[in-house]
Image 1 (cartoon, rainbow, N blue to C red):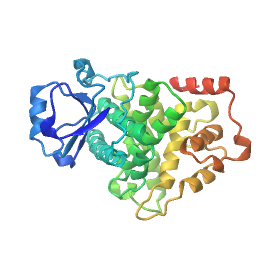
Image 2: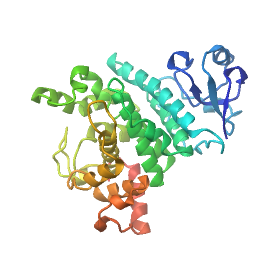
Image 3: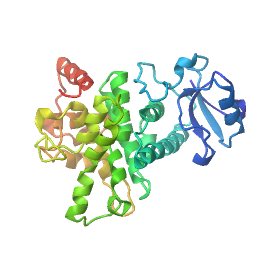
Length: 346
């Protein structure tokens, strides 16, 4: 059960899920950790955060709940997702999650800008926070991230894509490890954009050929940055490099096609495109979810249509699915498709 407490009421042994308050008041770089150090407890009690979200189910466990040793990637674990108590304010939890995610994304992208390899443990921690929010309400968090200011677009887009991938992956009943890898990949898929000047990245229209080439280089640049970490999971690298590929081979950067494009990448592409066209931005009208899905079903050759049909079902918009795609897969085929997500290639 999740509880929101005052920082003054925090005790050693509590498992921290998130913080309420401004980024400047947040005393830690991470969420989802066991509060087991007296120094951390003192910092938390002295901080100006207005609330601390704890998970009673995980509180009191030993130090194995801590994030792994420095420099190592903590592999996602097959643990139960924390569930909010019945009366918990889901909108408040979603707002807290977005604030915490934005701060963590700033750290990840900031590391890349300074030439350092981003710490994937941060991405894992953020992913676990998003999963917590989605467990209570799958719509509150995604709804909040639809409204994107110009200066924070890349961060919020990455958070939204991660949330969509997690929601979709959970709908497909993926294993917890695969689910968390998808969430981490969603957060990191656009990391290569750190090398693109803001004047180009935020340009509303009319890109020159040189600017277009610069933007199309971001998947390869992100892959290069993430590959510097010796333990970076293959699925994350695959999604980072190939989320702009198309089934007909007209995508970028490698122009791979068909079965060369893995199922995790196909899933990420759908979520990436969907968030981009449904985002409310200052200079462009957003498509409604129904309009977005209807148009996406017209892009034959670009997207995996059966998978897109599952995505529409996941979001509750089955009426947008073309008639020839409305037949559910037999159980054996569905199981095979789900299990395929464990591999970087089909």
